[in-house]
Image 1 (tube, rainbow, N blue to C red):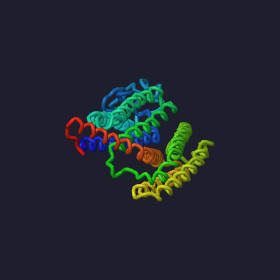
Image 2 (image 1 turned 90 degrees about the vertical axis):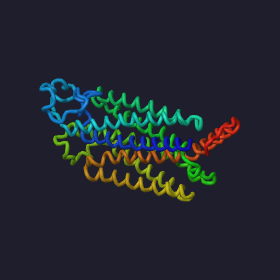
Image 3 (image 1 turned 60 degrees about the horizontal axis):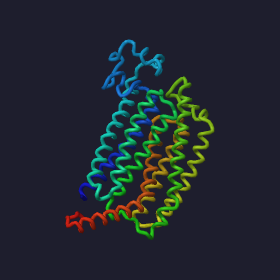
Image 4 (image 1 turned 120 degrees about the vertical axis):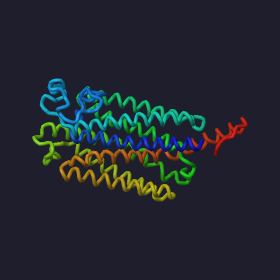
Length: 336
């Protein structure tokens, strides 16, 4: 049973990392304007494997996909394959989440919440895959794109629940450290979600500026055109930093695990502040936008992990004890 729990934990961690990679790829799609690189779904220009050049497309492809803007633009293999990588990653996550669910079912007697959490993640991955098709059908409607991205946070949250409930007892938090772990965490997590939503609105404004720009790669002056939402985003960013620094200070007063988490939290904050400053000061470099979003998703993941860590391990421990007691009463050998 311990081996199965380790396999489940590893699979859930790999799936979380794959979701973070998907967030990066999806943000690259938006940053490079590759959202309609494949104007149909699930195929790409009607093909399972995308074309490599315009010569591989029908002569009238621009008329066929005129409603997606191809009457005014030509085929770009880089944008097409960027979007296709996004789809391939989403498909991979579908398989990974299914394998996580199957492993969770195998250890359901150890913890009945494991199949529920893994099943919820699998369903949400499937729903988000369908929403990806809606993104294409609605020609990148801003609200649908943002919802598509934010649902990935829900998948991460459920998978982290699986990871935490399969952790060994060495990760358990001492009750005396409870004050260091809990007070600021819900506030920090909520602020990160709000800040990510505001960042998505900033991204939408950037898309609107890009749509009217003469040169997509010359971004000088774009920051000034974003509007008030950028100022709000920066104010909330200051709140995020303050709350998380307070949280890190409280963690630093705890045990070794808490201190390590505090260092990781401060490191993430420093990276996010640097990326945000570089985006504003360097005229929104394309390469930095996806990194900034992945940084926000990673910060959310760490905060959610910390928030769930202590109560989940206590519950997992109690569940394991009950399982062993039931095994002892039935005369079965229960692994330790």
